[in-house]
Image 1 (cartoon, each protein chain N blue to C red):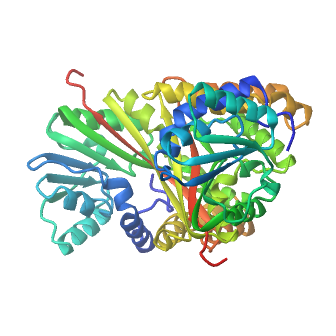
Image 2 (image 1 turned 180 degrees about the vertical axis):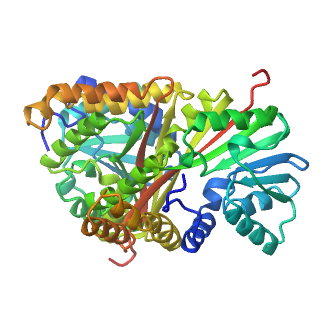
Image 3 (image 1 turned 90 degrees about the vertical axis):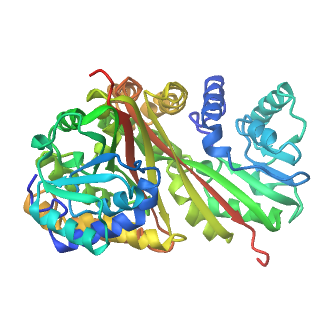
Length: 271
Length: 271
């Protein structure tokens, strides 16, 4: 981690994550609500893109949101305060060294974190220990290999592959979505249920064309330009051709598809 | 069309299409039911893989199912009779030269046909003329470019690309699913609504592992072996490596994803 391209650390990235959070809220979160009084750990809250949604959908749960980045946490806290959210406590902490007692949470929620983690199974195992037996863990991840579009473009796929390579070089996996089931299973959770949540965008859905195709996915890939070229992964002209092709899919006859994966599982009563 | 690999013309292919039809019925057809008394054209019924489902879900509609292949039609009719279906009439006819009066149908249903057609917009326009104004057309297509899996394998993608190339050489498009929206729009239909229907398969869904990953998708790609090697598209060892990698995704820690697209639109009242 720590490469310049990793999202969440500059204003444009923050804006993009907020856009993404808005357009994808229903797709990703409509079936997540925690009961009154339950204690929920959000691991890797970043700038709080998911935190407000979590808090609004579970207004009587007690949510602890942690992140390694003090800068991100400050932004998350500022936004929570602005939204009048009162049931979230923010704490600076690393998932691999979190200052919580074993079995001290009823639920754990992890969104867009494992893609950046070198040892995702170890992270899940540690989070599992924080859960009371019978508690649930929810994991949401994207998968850049799930992106396809019309008109198709090899240059666009090349540009996307740069992001995948950069994230891999930083120890992560931008194609992790398809692995949510095996990762959660390997980490020892029970009753792992994963669902694929495909974002399908054509011009009959202008909010998604703008909010997802342009401002989320293409902007994210575009944001890796300097890092990708600097790392010698691609020629500038080819990269720009790929980005233009991605924007082209946002036109009237264009189509863009991308899939997120959501897994829910239970901590076994006997681990 | 007419290349040896095209599905629907031998027993193994028929069995595969029946398996596919069983496991995907709900995903693809749960929202298709035509009212009593409506006249429905199924264009390109093949061996009737979708016909029985159509007939069962719209028991009081009058369904006319056409196909160019007399062999396929005979099989479709045999199966309809065996299932006790009485509301379907089978006719040998080409979509591009169908013996029907303009505006003589209330609904048109097209499933896995356009992928084989050289001029899909022209086919849709002709079908549109058979619809009464205000009638609906439903189009279902897959997209081989939507296939991704864990463990990932370049050899598997190479093997899949052979099918895409063979279908292209025969005038079709195995990646047509993503184009359903622009095709239906270009053909002049109103209120085009397309939804992506992703088949997500992990080992918690053993019926799909067997019925879809193994017996539908991988069997279909495997069925192109001789044609692909004969056309010089791939070395035998590489092809076999790709097929083995696809079967590998059906093991306990494997995941397989594929998306179908379903479009529904209306014939404009004034064309």
